[in-house]
Length: 344
Image (cartoon, rainbow, N blue to C red; front, side, top):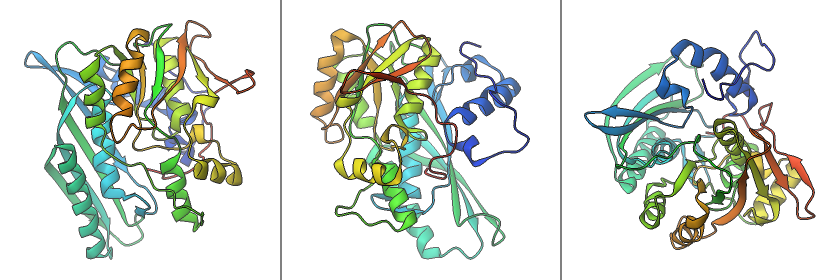
């Protein structure tokens, strides 16, 4: 398999870090799941599988949501589940159509909270123009899980002529970020830990199919699309570099970060590069299309703070480099541990 990851270090038990979206997640996927389920669609390692069906192509994805707390500034687990699944479909260029929703609920969970979560998921799906067409409900004994988990799947149709994948980046391409990073991670952490800031940091959680449609309306020269969720921007650019076998260079001074997020990150010893986002897109585009796509993003309510943040080079293949404001460089590596467990 192209770019197939391997274990950097064996482990006898599953750790929280195996679900972080970082190095241990990559190792677990590469050495266990890819080997067990090996097929061409899965081996691409994109956020959704692209499948040939009836002469056309569909995108199919699945995800599970275990965030704690289940209600946080700017959203809740229901909104997160709908938006996150839509956004995984969007990364293939697909038009999202249908979702499933499976609820695993702890005995004793308040019905009023369940109603809020279900209505939030339904409203987010409605805003995205998708329908929840099937689902499942399980209840487990008190203490068997933490309140509620949600599993989703999504299906969308890919327009003819589009070919968007993490394996498509080329030297000379331009990297665009649709807005500020770290908002979701800090919003969830502040609620979880009871942290108070002068200004409330809210999650950026939102379905991004409208934003992607605005980009595609001005140019189809989009090589790669990713939503930087677990492991943040750092994980996404490392994944693309590995899939495409290119070098990715990020200009630190161009990264949009809210001052509240920057301050909270410094206080807590965190790096915004590694914080989760739930309403942002990373796009790698042909250089001649960059300005038009950036203009489309900044004209959209969810992309007003979009910026060009870097470029693709031939070397070092499979690596990511951060260029500081002083023009020094350092490698952006995958996170090894779990910075913020259960962030989505």
